[in-house]
Length: 52
Image 1 (cartoon, rainbow, N blue to C red):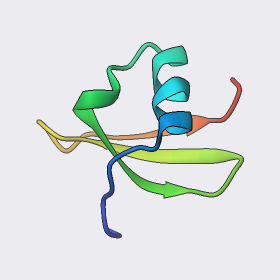
Image 2: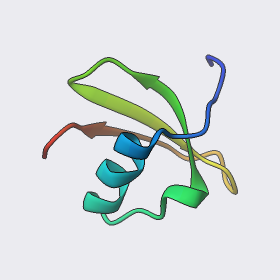
Image 3: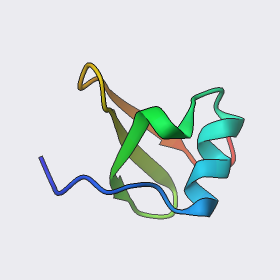
Image 4: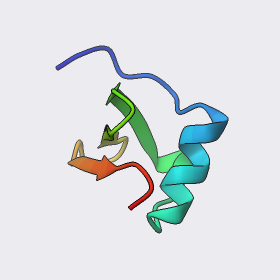
């Protein structure tokens, strides 16, 4: 697993569009087409497509 980081403002907006609370998620990887986020509480991993 890579270094987890707090989401940027742009990433927070995208998490909100995906019906997720940005404060509960950390970003593992973001390559422009998809973003991999990890839950702070349970460690659950989700892959989100940008603009989906």
